[in-house]
Length: 418
Image (cartoon, rainbow, N blue to C red; front, top):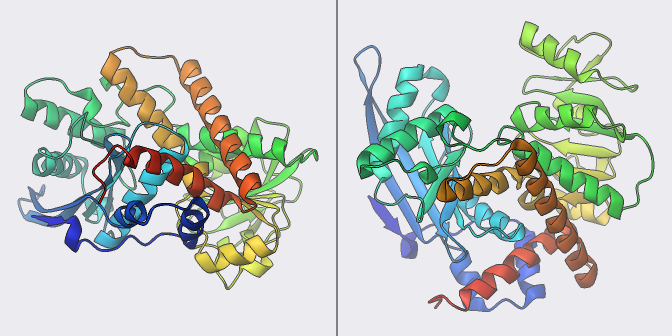
């Protein structure tokens, strides 16, 4: 079943987008089209569980906009995923690919399922069922999925294999985030973290923050937050004093030994009671007296209720939508610099783009080459957003949306936008 754009729910996006559209004098027809996805595809997927019973779940693929290239976006397996969430994230991907100036559009997929209840074989069956259901609307030149919450490189490998079986030939470019041995890209595992660090490094220079080391707190120690923690631990310009997982956090004002923290979590299942560290809640971590606060967990972490108590000078949004609209206004009034999600966490889709390019050319790069290209791309994106922000006398979030809207509007001139 497909719901067309005329009956699709309106995209729920940050208030900064409206400000950017006004400052950009964006044509009303362009903005209106961007408020709704091009297509929403919905299917029921049924697989056999290991015990012989049948599992039936709802799955979506939202294709938001392809003015600048094929639809692009991850697929999440989660029991609470819904159409509004997938719809909004598909639009964010449109702006994210535009702000870092890669020739892709925006899309997103979701399956409402308790992924943690799936065995590996059930996960594979579900991944292949998803591809069979949506095979007609995905493809290397049409829509390119990627991993997201509770999906990974194995998921993408199964999806690539299933699509290749359907079309009758190997089609590695149909998805990104695949294992390296199955035409994936080197450097993909740390792409979002490395892209975030590249953005942070560039911003530190532009803000002329000469203090060494800069004190950092990180909410989230999964692939993104944890990856950044490992990168910052190798750079004398930064000192990580606090980090948290989904259960709790730890803090030590002289700095944490990141390797020992990860060893402790591997041994105990959490960071709580790590040696030489004090326990604290996720809420307390957000309000620590640090230079840089990294939000690498989930959405809606800084709100109108706690934004006045944030002490960081710079906030790096590695998660999607971790700051609410109300909190954004408060932080802006307090002159706290927020590096927005559509810029800060774009390293993942950047390397997905690199993977797609390598697949199309059948020419594969070293990890050093991938990391160098990613770092340069992120630095250039930060520079462009910084210049736009200064010229328009606004904040980085609005500046990032202005850059994205400018590129989308330029592409729209050649499209049938009514």
